[in-house]
Amino acid sequence: MLSTDKAQSVSVQVAQRVKRLPKGQPFSISRFTGFGTKNAVSKAIARLVNRGELERVYRGIYMRPKPGRYIARARPNPWTLLSLITRQKRLSLQIHGANAVRKFGLSTQMPLIPIYYTSGASRSVFIGKAEIRLVHAAPMVMQHAGTEVGVAISALFYLGKGGSTPECITAIKKRLRPEDLATLMTCKLPKWMSTVLKVEGVK
Image 1 (cartoon, one colour):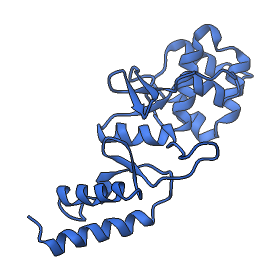
Image 2 (cartoon, rainbow, N blue to C red):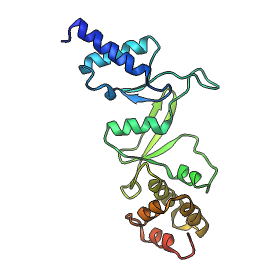
Image 3 (cartoon, rainbow, N blue to C red):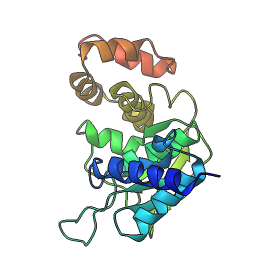
Image 4 (cartoon, helix red, strand yellow):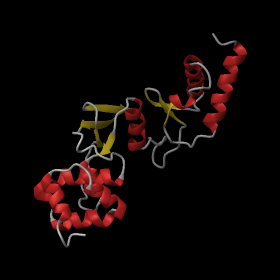
């Protein structure tokens, strides 16, 4: 077991590092690996939570409280939070097709419940009372997860063969950098998708 002095030292180190973290930005407790034993770090984090200096937003994930504009406390960004959760489980996270097409200006609809693709099993994550859904997607959809190329792939799969009109393909291509478009063309894609991407005049 750690001596009282060492335990206090871990607590001080953790507290000092926490003060330098941005408010409202979730982080994994694993970032304090090396500060001391897992038990000592957990106790230091728990003390900060009890003092109101940290907020537990999910298992093993915390953030410094940040006042919200219309609510008492701002909630963490879903993408940032889910990235931490999936990374802990060594899974990939990809933007859902409904949000991907919105990013390309092809839709204005927004799901009532945030949805994301994952390489893991489908499930719901609750942050307080707010639900976020993780939906399992095939490896082909998860290619280049978390990048602009991944967003394009997600959008194309969501649009489908019938919805991938020349206008939609043009909009997607215009938003991609040349190097991202080149990467997209080398991905493992269905034949119809490769075909519509290669159509002359759609740039």
